[in-house]
Length: 473
Image (cartoon, rainbow, N blue to C red; front, side, top):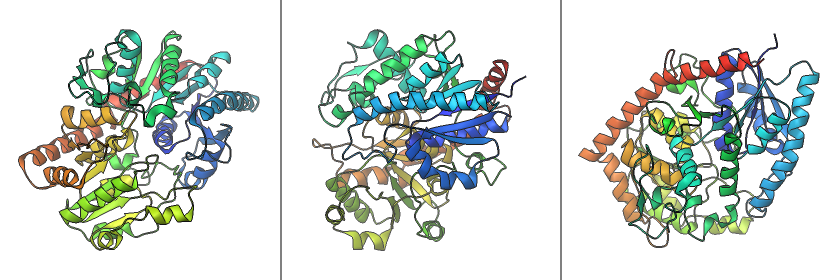
């Protein structure tokens, strides 16, 4: 019998790489050989961190996305990138599969992350079963599915219409701000990402063309019980949270990182600094690996932080491919005051920070990884969503799971310092609302741990998937 061998194909951004690598580790622990593949550039950047933390059985490979020296977001066209990753990626992915077969390690199953439907086409051509690893909540997949299956006209809304709402099957009532940004006509940021909606449509068409479409979702049954059942024709399988086991009550203390950072962590002693702070006192601010805030917005955040007089840890990523003059212009006007009150770092180990006793709240863009990590750590959130699935995640945080509050933007799309202060105080000031958020956050933390332990829903679901992979050999 052939050894089960899963090829895991991952879109080359940190938000895709982290859950994919964690999924790979769980498969390996269940006796599956895994080859993890992403773009040449991402592979090169993550190789150093992955080498020291990768478990035995994880093979690393790279496919070309046509931008082997890296995609420069301030110069390169995202539409061209998506065209290149499809054409170059398809060919190099075939080469990886054929080479593996020639070496006596045939790929028996292919799992691919969001935005890579062409990987399923390659698998079909080579008669290999495939599954989608959905790295956003099941709720968002449901919204896209309904949009393309009968609700498109009803879901047309303008971002400046506060009275619009829609009730979709098995989902909470959604306002315009709660929809994935690609469904909302705004005429601004998402124009250059006009490829996104057709790509999601292609993804659903790909699943529709399969006999038994499988979607492995980075969520867990207790968190999204109804959304996981909302699409009858797809088998949505909750296997999350896909975060290192030591942050979910696991016994393996060495399993404490994802193992594939594209960014250099700060050499600053931020963890030692956190150790000096009182319990639940720190405001942590991070907006993920892609989002760059405007200078004006950063100034408003800085002003709000100074006015609340609470210690904070703020991640401000170093922007690549910008001139030194521009870097000078981006510097905050109140940097000296900020540095007296808190710490600013270019990158950090987010889970280590979120699980530190000094953490009081998390000001987040509400990317799905950050959202799951906050839930799994029992930390309430001040939500500041910007685009893609983040508005939906903020809706779930505030109204469904009740673990946070959503900040309101002004007519220019900026959150002002007074609003930032208001939301932080709701979460941290000891009032009734904040207390309820903290209790709910602790409840979801316990349920996340239940899901991944022996006999938990995600562990059982993953075992069933592994058994099916074994049968296909």
